[in-house]
Image 1 (tube, rainbow over the protein chains, first blue to last red):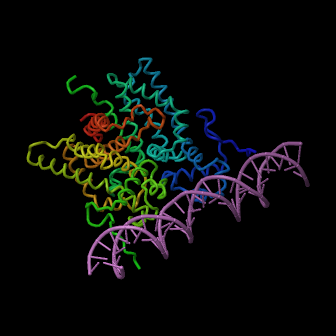
Image 2 (image 1 turned 180 degrees about the vertical axis):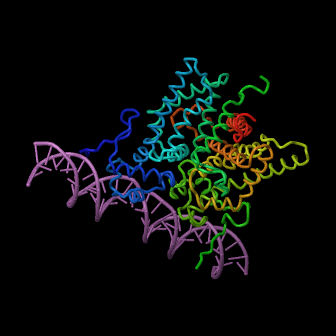
Image 3 (image 1 turned 90 degrees about the vertical axis):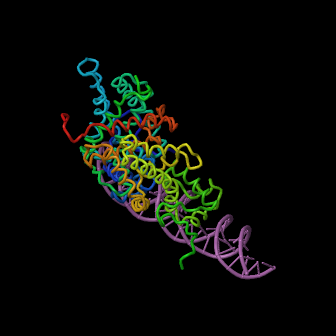
Length: 236
Length: 236
DNA sequence: GTATGTTTCAAACGTGTGTTTTAATCATGG
DNA sequence: CCATGATTAAAACACACGTTTGAAACATAC
């Protein structure tokens, strides 16, 4: 009855990276670029398979469906990034607990900027594709993916919120979450190059050089994170 | 040969609001909500017309095509917003030139936040739809719309950049553009509720109350805008 | 009331979609 | 060498899409 599937399914037992066959990888690579450029809905399987140089049916054979393919494309990049972030955060908290380093907001920010920057510079791992894909996920409504994310990586955001709260004492939990939300937003959309100026044709700024992005973005975000509490009226 | 069209076309002579028939308005309203919720590609004309309670062919009659409909949906909101922004900016620069008020970064920011806030609170003019739509436009690739925008509203961004440059003396033009880019990004995505926490299921923050958004977002953005130049090394 | 221009409606058109099917091909161990 | 399972390939499937058509309904003015 049930067909025998190769069972390289994505969500089986936590953040382990599934092994993919050669054709599966070619599909993932082609799909990644097209999803980023055109969006999931506007990208057809025929375009993907054509660009990947594989047969159309290969998508439904190696992945289950187009939706599952999208999830696989996304999680292939997100998994390693999340892992690196958690490692950085571990080290950070350990040094903080040992009293070696006071756990600043800058350290917390850099603990997720650094992995993203590393990814951006490594074409073998997708380059800047990941952040651009992520920024699409933030705006579009991928219900299935959202479930997977909250099930599999829910504690990541919890831990980051806690760390940021410790780095920014004197803020209510609500304010910490707001700043986390704002800060993360800036980072992803800046990396992705979602530029207002671009919409108006004046795309002078949106040089895609990741180092340049970090140079301007990190100080901006840090200043925002460290700004005085909005809860208290001006006098404090 | 050429069919006689009702000629309610969008881009004819600058930011004038075209008059729409009743059915055209119902289509625009229905399409707006669906485009925001599902994205342009995932929204079918059949869904739009069904929700609007009009015949399928009405879309291609009143608007020329689905693409033209999207442009009309967007520009219906963007036009008034841009006009209000330019008025605020005019007043601001006049007061600045007269020496009554020194043209601060806060004033510049508020000159585009205030119109957006006003729109957000006015259900008759789409409420928060506009910002959410805009945040989609920032991410998706609507080539045609981009042309219209740069042709019709190109000077808006030029003027804002100039004003912000004056409000933030001592920054290179490049840095001003970066901060403008980052600041606008935060605003639109914050208003649109594109929340990282939401992706992970932890959507504690994303209350859609516009006042709350402004309360947290504006100080964050202002702090970023006013942060010391990233061009100069720490000592200055 | 008839003529005219505008708007609605149901139906169909052609195309492209994601997916399935069935057979062919390949690799590999007995 | 053949049998078995995994992978590829070509073709077709059913369906939804944006768009077009041609006639009906409506309004308005003569």
